[in-house]
Length: 414
Image (cartoon, rainbow, N blue to C red; front, side):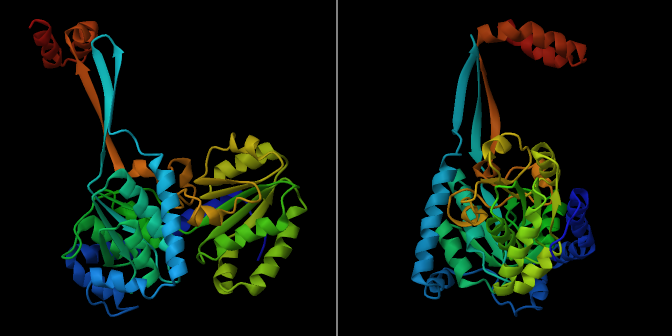
């Protein structure tokens, strides 16, 4: 169950799983494109007989009666912390700066008007994902936030979506939900961008529909990478591994350590925790995708971690900040024995929607910027035009674009 594993093999297995789902997802997208709401109902029949696809305001309100008041209070407090952190990311609506006499440049930032968020369901409710997706969109200024989650949507998820300020909620899950938000159906209008985590079918659907809609990034089954030395606490390391493994049978964990004795110690702790874990069957399956590798020194550990580019990176070493400054690829970084990944999942305020399967090499985790677009602003007066006029005309004529050059000459002669 707990075994040595090669870095490249571990990462390769993560990407292969996406390709295995391509045929299924292609068929689902085609069904939704051709049949709309009927396809959503037909695909849901395996789990539930679907009535109304849209969730009513009355259903939202009724959900509060089915959720413990203490849980509702915790969701409200978590939402406030997530909002507080993301408010600090909000860019100025417009900034302008005089770069040189007569030339003022800047950037205008505008929120997207309509976005879709996907909230996983199935094995468990994920109200935290509802908060993580919707709050930064609301902070950015998005007016229409459309949410999809597998039917029947659990009351806990409905409450979280309501607290987060989602404007529309639909009962649709899996790749078909992504297709519905991208292509539109009778009930669901198309969105500009889709964000949120999901299984391999959801992730692949997002990637395949990028010609119709923008997405955040591939965010599939959860994973953790841990860089540890001899100072790491085996119980802490094991606890984080088990926490990620309980997400999904396709979750994966990897320990990269400079201490050859640590894997065995962690393995013993894992056995103890698995034995009493409520989600034991899921954890056991996920541990088949997991393992450890022993490296010679911290340089090699950091290099290995950057190859993996994990969704979550936990740093459990004597001098953690020196590692933080050198690591390049990770969705989110958790430093020290008290920084549980679960804190980032729920209530510290940072976002837990992160790129997986090595995609943190090129993508950042979800933030306010994902829900905005920018346009450069250029303001020139006569002096500014004279300053760069010769440069523009010379390059334009060199490219053979004489009308471009003329558009400047006309202004200089006014």
